[in-house]
Image 1: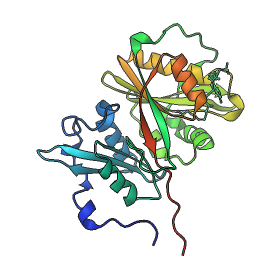
Image 2: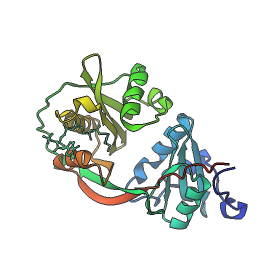
Image 3: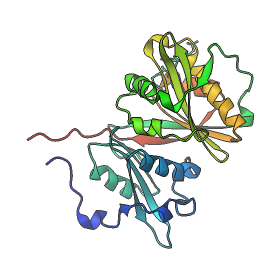
Length: 262
Ligand SMILES: CC(C)(COP(=O)(O)OP(=O)(O)OC[C@H]1O[C@@H](n2cnc3c(N)ncnc32)[C@H](O)[C@@H]1OP(=O)(O)O)[C@@H](O)C(=O)NCCC(=O)NCCS
């Protein structure tokens, strides 16, 4: 058997989330950056076959929200308590874990960027036509993301709710050249999963996809936007900063421990 088994007493309070755990009230105070989006993250995880666990607090509150995506082998934990985050890391050491804490030395940091719509210049001149991708293109979208990013669960793409979670894309000859996802929950927006195939890079597609998603958010009534970008991702950070977003903090991703042999 591989991995570190948690003692039942340390992990015993943890349980699968119930609908009453996933309300904005129950999830209040768990994240400086993503709080308004947490119920959406949890629903999306469940919809695409993932696992949502909570560590209950008192009075119906939640001390930690844990989201696990089995195909990507990635999880996120939203909690103020680094000891709880560490327990979740140990629970699945072969899974990359995003949290507010640097839990292990060999992980990496991501900057969280934020901006208000009125601070972002609406006058961007587009170099490429950007269009909305249809749910029927899930296969092609997943193929591009896999090409750039590694394993992707097609279920979250195929079941995304249009108007809440949309994909904008730039066409190349006979294939998608690049795409980026945008989420809106009430007035709160998030940009994620930006990817341009290597042969189309440095031609302004990433920048066009940034501004197209901002415009999508503006038209849908969002007033703010958040996105997280690895410290080392100079290109993506350059696009966000040129677009008017500013770094407001950091989150961390652990490097998974490969399974032990024998
Ligand atoms: C990051 C990424 C989306 C950029 O796409 P792109 O279409 O090449 O971006 P753009 O052409 O619009 O670049 C705009 C500017 O960003 C900066 N930039 C982009 N890539 C860069 C790189 N690799 N190194 C340094 N600066 C870079 C440059 O200032 C560039 O302007 P320039 O080409 O005139 O010098 C693309 O490299 C990619 O898909 N990377 C892998 C996936 C990824 O990192 N996604 C983002 C996750 S947050």
